[in-house]
Amino acid sequence: MAKICIVGAGSIGCYVGGRLLAAGADVALVGRARIGSELSAHGLTLTDYRNGRWHVPPSAIRYMAEPSAAADADLVLVTVKSAATQSVADELKPVLRAGAIVVSFQNGLRNADILRAALPQQTVLAGMVPFNVMQPGPGAFHQGTAGELEVAASPALQPFLDDFRRAGLPLTERTDMAAVQWAKLLLNLNNAINALANRPLKEELSQRAYRRCLALAQTEALRLLARAGIQPAKLTPIAPAWIPRLLATPDAVFALLGGKMLAMDPLARSSMSDDLAAGRMTEVDWINGEVVRLAERLGQRAPVNAQLCALLHAAEAAAARPSWSGNDLLAALRAAG
Image 1 (cartoon, rainbow, N blue to C red):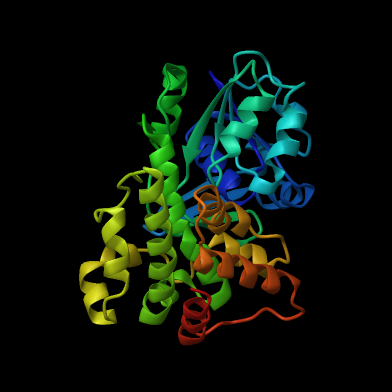
Image 2: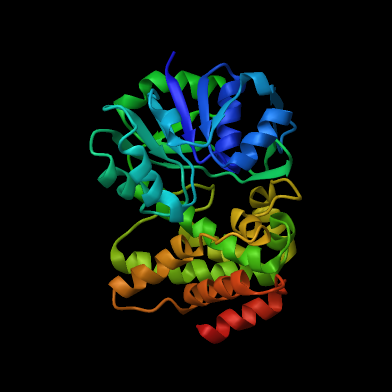
């Protein structure tokens, strides 16, 4: 049986790894000692927005704090936050066996490149996790939104495809991962808005003012992508170029035409919102910041996304977490633009 190791087993890593374990795969988890203690006491309880439920008892879980657990892995899934990618790559370099497959299931655009530069003896593939995972309790992880795992197509993935199918998390292989990553980033521009709103995603996206904030951020990014000759992939029933127009429609129209975007757990929040609540550094510089860097490379400006970066950094440093209304946030973004 192929051996799989999840490096960075937080919410996404524990959920994906737990689903694989529940389906009988050979999986080791590497992450923080705090989560390891929770799993030792409670095991893994996994649920999703479609009322699915799985449980893995503590006795079936191998959870370690050191990357040495990946030494005999055939497949390594990296799910750490983007800021930790280089340090994890450096830790894995002396550990992984030559020929191991490494998949970056992380937000942002450049993590696979960082891993690839540090791990020349391994096959490193970019991947994408489209769904949100929250932790409602110790050892419990809940998939709050829809979507399937996507990864750069490679013959090296063949030995692992059945494991993911049995887990109900099939891998969709793509030959256009750069376009997929940009499309996911366009959707993730909402993470900052959701974090600043301090509301569940469904509640936030049900309000036109917040959707207009996202429309501004996406329109700015799409303009820059067009100038750069980059065509984002179509990950939703609506093409990326049309999504800002849909977002700006009145609530009743959006509920009718964009209802699938609201098909999520009513309590789900973005990972950026969760990070802000926990006092952790957010990934805003790897999401909205990528739009700002693209603008700089093109000799252009991205004032809306730059303002979202600034507001998130201010929120990270604030003594009390802000809760922006949709109208106030929209006014701040329009003033910046």
